[in-house]
Image (tube, rainbow, N blue to C red):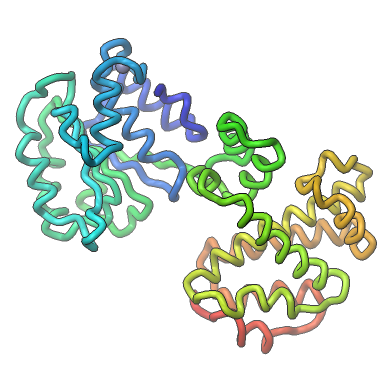
Length: 351
Ligand SMILES: [Zn+2]
């Protein structure tokens, strides 16, 4: 599969293709960025491109080396399928990537490639290397053989040893734009309605968009809608607070983010109707009647203000602010009353 089939992060793809074309790919690479934005998929294509028989700045995805490299990296049972490419990932029974795995790299890193043009090692979740393992890989990163490429993949570069980070060329991956996720879902055969809703909820995470169950999404949206209507129509906070009264503490923040994404889509739809938009242009076209009902309680400026409040919550959570306080502020502004006591008793005040 060529680079262009990965949605988003065009800048990274262009940089890699240019480096491949000029035969100037750095030997030590660090792929950083949030979950689900294509870091691993890009590493696989890069490993293919370094061995592809038909292209030198991309992977055809079809020649024998391209297929063998993909199998070697995607299927643990076929790890030896292409001798010059090795994937290292966390063994599920362990908490960290141990030094024994890095020794596997060392055994072959200094040997000339047997089949292709370059040896490639892909270390997933690189932040989970034990300190022994990290120190061991550091030695190869310091003086990598010319034909050897090590790609470290991580969503948490801040945990890596600074000495490792400083020896790698860092490529930062960004969240994927909603319309690019939507297009990828349409390409997978999803209906336009599903593709749009899932793309909205995934917040730039393509992997999440692909794994969210549609029935689950509809059930969550229904709960979010009831909480939304109670807040805007009756200034009643109880359905809203009940959403996470029983949720496990660790899941609360994710739940709040998803609920806020639904709220944002409801506010946008109210705004859209207020501006005279037709119901088929709504983000939630199947909820057209209900959106019209909510529009009786919310005018355009109210909806715009609601959108700004939701955006403020999402930004505050991105900055790891205290969840309980953030939500207290949100419902207090939504209802015009102070709800500190209700919120702080229900929503954990961590963060
Ligand atoms: Zn190929």
